[in-house]
Length: 196
Image (tube, rainbow, N blue to C red):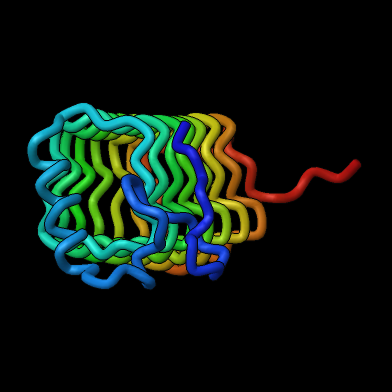
C-alpha cells in the first residue's frame, strides 16, 4: 500500500508521490500533473501511487493494472478506464464525469462519498467495492458482477443494474430514483438494515 506522508506545509493532506507537498501547495501543479500523466502513460502497472486531490482530464488508464493507490479527492473527466484492473485503492470523495469503466476488474476499492455522473461500468467485475454515501447518477452497472459491494446510504438516480449479480450487495438506506434492476438477482441483495 502507498505510504502516507503528510504535506510539509502542515495542511494535513497527504503529500503526492515523489514530493513532500500536496497538490494544493505545489509551486507548479500543472507541471506536476503533466509528470503524473506521463508516468501513467509510460507504465501499464502502477503500485503505491498517491495523487490525492489531482485532476485528470482525458487520461487513458485503459488496460492498466493499479494496486494500492490513493486517488482520494481527485477528479476524473472523460477518462478511459476500460479493461483496467484496480485492487486495494481509494477513490473516496472523488468525482467521475463521463468516464468509461467498461469491462473493468475492480476489487476491494472505496468510492465512499464519491460523485459519479454519466459513467459506464458495464460488463465489469466490481467485487467488495464500497460506494457508501456516493452520489451516482446517469450511470450503468449492467451485466456486471457486484458481489458483496456496498451502496449503503448512496444517492442513486437513473442508475441501471440490469442483468447483474447482486448477491450480498447492500443498498440499505440508499435513495433510489429511476433505478432499474431488471433480470438481476435482487432477492440476494440487502435493501434494509437487519434488526438485531
